[in-house]
Structure formats: C-alpha cells, structure tokens
Length: 318
Image 1 (cartoon, rainbow, N blue to C red):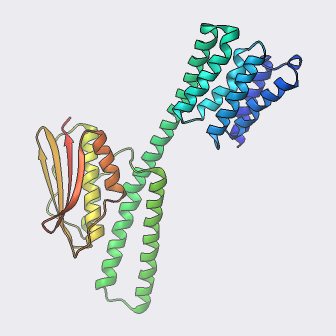
Image 2 (image 1 turned 30 degrees about the vertical axis):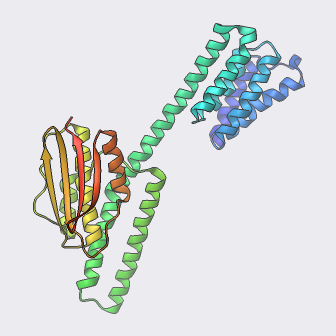
Image 3 (image 1 turned 180 degrees about the vertical axis):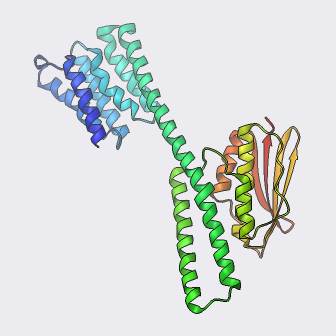
C-alpha cells in the first residue's frame, strides 16, 4: 500500500502541476479528477475495477474542458497494472476517442493510443518477468528441497521397517516421518502457488549419487549425447525426476533402467517394476516437464506396461 501511495502522490503532483485541473474548471471537474486519482491506491488489488473507473472519469474530463495530455496520465498507471488485454484496448480506445475532438487524429488519438499501448506493454513485461522469477524459484524448490525430503523419508521408512528399534525410537521416527511428510506437502502447496519449473537443471550426477545412497538401484548413469543446452537441461531434469519418483513410490531397492536413443530426435525411457497394484501419479515434476517438453516440440508420456512403470521423454535434437 505504501508503494501505491507514493506512486499515486507522484502522479497527482504531475497532474495538478501541469494544469490538468485548475479552479476555474469547477467542482464537477474536481470530482472527476478525484475519481481519476484516488482509485489508483488500489490498482494492485483491484486492477480491473480501477481501470474502468479511471478510464470513465478520464474520458469525461477530456470531453469537459480543453484537454491536456497529462489528463490521461492516471489511465497509464492503471493500464500498467491491468493484465487483461481486451480491457486495456477498450480503455485506450476510450481515451483516444475522448481526446479526438479537441486535438485531432495525430496529436490526439494516435498519440494517446501509442502511449497507452506502451504503458500496458511495460506492465505486461513486468508481469512476465515476475512470473518467470516465480517459476525459477519453484523449480529450484522442487529440484532441491522436494527431492532431498523424499530421500530422507525413504531412508527413515526403511530404518523403521528393518531397524532394531525400541518403542521410544519408533515413536521418534514416526514423529520425524510425520514432519517430513508435512514438509513435502508444504512444498507441493508452494508449487501450486508458484507453478513448477526453474532456472536450470539439477546436478544430475549428484542427484543420482544421493538416490543410490537412499536405495535406488541404477546399473549405470545414463550417457546423454551432446545436446543444445536447453534440451540437455530438460533431459537431465527428466532423468532426475524419474529416479526420484521411482524411489519415492517403490521404496529402497527399486531398480530403475534408463535407456537413451539419439538420432534425429532424443528419446529417454525410464522403467521400474510396479510393486503391487498402485500406480505412481504424474506429480508436479512430471507435469512441469511435460509442459516444457511440449514447448520445445517434444512430449512426455507415462503409464504401466507389462508390469513396469514406464516414463518416456521425446525431444528434438536441436
């Protein structure tokens, strides 16, 4: 709220200092000026309502008196905060139409439309940058905390099942397991808020070494061909994610087979035996990988085949 207050105050100073409102315009124009400026305090919380109010007041003010270009500065700030493209276009057209009678097509309408478009595009770029930052943070969260917590849980469950423990030790271990599952749930809820995806792939060798320590049986690390950086990062994230999922859903001792087929495209297949009738879900990690693969022109598929859980990534080799 403090930032909105400072921004609104700055716009108000420019607005009144430029003569967008003067006492000779009367109280009605003063009221329109207030409706142009005051709602800007809530532009972050209710951008749609603010843009509608500010645009209507601005159009009325422009038609009421000899307009100045600074009269639609409040609309620019409201446009900057509004994600809806169609609403932004309608607001820009309304301002352009209102300024046309006094200033004509070039100095009036075209100028107003251009400035409004620039204001909205700057806001759109800022929103995109913030979304990318959130996605990168969420991917790091998934590739580090979620995977590490899953390994800890597998180790603790194995110890509880096979360890020579007293009742007090088992109670402490149950408390640890409950805390770990709670932490994993919080991570997943955070991923719901932030989306999944992150800046770069995890250190694959480190991830696989840690999973082997937790009980994953992997004959050898997969040998990935020389790939362009974005494709290679996606391939490494796929291997790490399928390895974590195999251990998480099947427990210590699960054997994971990884196959890599490289030609015009790259196909990576992960297979592990299904235990019982339960089938692993796709989860946040595979869902995020599927989105990335689709964006790169590839695909992720998964499902049971002949008693195994099979996950396959297909990517173009470019």
